[in-house]
Length: 249
Ligand code: UDP
Image 1 (cartoon, rainbow, N blue to C red):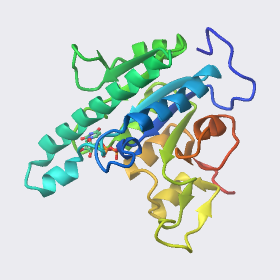
Image 2: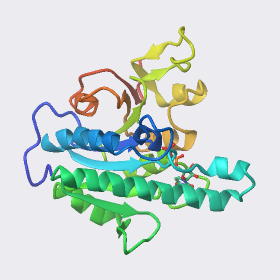
Image 3: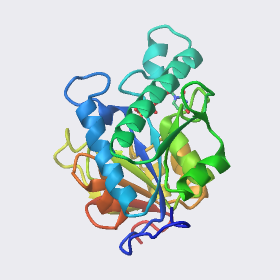
């Protein structure tokens, strides 16, 4: 969109990739998708879209199926992972529909071809969609078993030249331990990629962090439960942890 329309002056990142976990869609039901939550997330996206920011989204599938749980139940891991990837397509379609209800132009691109349902992933086409002001939702992760949607997020952010990878979580940044379980957990404002890896901070898996590092894409970790949280991060306001090469120094 930046190439074809104005970007609000307070915007810090022209093109961003938002990583939403499947769990963010669950709501109070404990499983699947809560339409109210999906609509609320779509409003967050619409508000940032209105600022002229180009938006790509990678959505997880953990609210429906996770490969590791299938594998622990005796299923072979690759098959279970493919099921997990299909779960992300369900979530992507739900988000597409919620965004369209808000008149946000959107396209879903899947790493596993599903012509009747959505577009296949085509890098240059995805970039063109964003330049034209369309939100692109990347479904089916990387298309490969044994990977995660976090890695898919770092991969797609690198491929489509995003200026930042925004990881939406339940909390307002990266902590030394789970703040819900450990009252002494320390919150970090800034970190570098190596600190995240060496301290084994549970932000994203190592493959995702390494890919973001290699391509110098800052990772911003913020809470999706704060209304307007996405817009705040894009404008550099609000609470989030930023992970870069420089980190705190
Ligand atoms: N998955 C995969 N390859 C990928 C991305 C995802 O095999 O590139 C599978 C994997 O089984 C994973 C599931 O899809 O458990 C759902 O994705 P993820 O767990 O990353 O979703 P989230 O935790 O973000 O909801």
